[in-house]
Image (cartoon, rainbow over all chains, first blue to last red; front, side):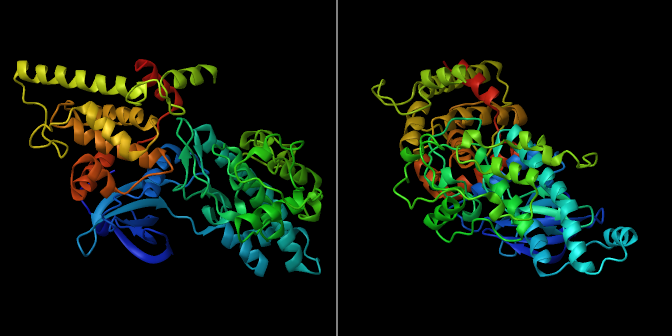
Length: 337
Length: 176
């Protein structure tokens, strides 16, 4: 980690293309000139002089310094300080490059099956060349094979974060990077992550993209736990199966109603203490529906795991570590994960 | 968890209490006493050994501020509205800073190191925080200085801001 290195960030890297844009700056695919390695370069302007280093950047760097050794957390390779054309200070975060994310991956399957890697197609063709509707079969088989693997990797990465005292708080398909070739999945975007090792006054409620936000956060719990991430994992699990968001609310109230329509309106019996949460009030009374109505093609073991991820009472929700041990993953070959 | 809760309670890291006239949590009063004691000891050491090996850094002011460290800390606490834990975390960061960089806490650098380390702790730890311009005003430095000190501090620590529960408790126990 250099402040004034031999080469400035501009000299050390060749920007190849812009691949994203965030609140504080752009993300580029770039080549490190010294090694030829392809990286993702996240540029953070400090041009808003009043703010200094954005807390999202400060948290992301700090937390990734600790977590990057896990294969399922994106690797932060370096942080460099530089100056832009106007002489303003810029921070460059250098990440390993991943060519896609889960959001794009899911969307590609919603549109067509064209993104199946060629070597997978070759294997499938050699096994069952006579299948009539080849594309449909490939898509279905492909997802069945990789669904378990992707979900296992996600649980493993989350377990690693939680085991180190970190809540992610913004798990969603867009923040889960993937390598299409190896089908490896990595947790990224830890700008909203936080430590839960030290007591503080109150946690914010504006974390977690709405669709993946846990009910206790929506209802205004002042302190929440690792369970908020597992709720997000459950929503992602369902979305991987159906290709559609499980609870696509467009306001906090609508988000709650989406959840209540499927899982039933919670009460003190299923969730002790729920009526005392800050944002609680009278809601329409729905009875719980079977999860299979929302995720019809998921098998029984998968539905059981999903139901444990979507428990109302946070303390009853399955942990990431326990999820890895669930029988749903029993027949998954975990040797390379 | 019981041990943790007891430690937090005795140091008033939880809900605000009124057991002290100033309303300042016990942990912070002990913390600032430690700082002031360290400063006196360090300055005596530097004076007697005649070693001018306390390097002048961006955190040194041209003269020692009139305000005591305790009053400076109370001012920061009053206007930052941060969790008291942030001051314990700030102490941990300052220790890391000196371990990495060398040097000593003195009346010339204590105030600037304190405002910088608390600000960084708040940004890392609390979900409610203010702009650097605000902390600069609270701390009596310019925004430009605040920004430069922040970057210097972060790169010196190599952005290693995470604190384990165990380390945090260890510091709390020493302050009990």
